Image 1 (cartoon, rainbow, N blue to C red):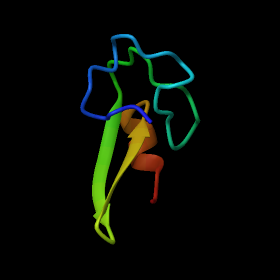
Image 2 (image 1 turned 90 degrees about the vertical axis):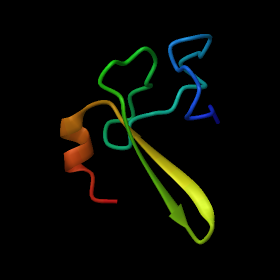
Image 3 (image 1 turned 30 degrees about the vertical axis):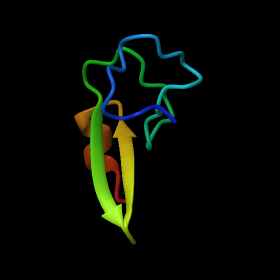
Image 4 (image 1 turned 60 degrees about the horizontal axis):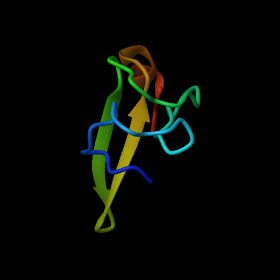
Length: 60
């Protein structure tokens, strides 16, 4: 997994990049990329989205 705090525009291949939780698109050099971070049972979980619209559509 890619460190969600790293620069996702540098040296990240499409295979290693996070994907949108709604459409599954690889998020490489995506200026509209959004992330929801939460703690569940002591574990940090991140969910990535390619747009605000997909973030709003998600019901996780």
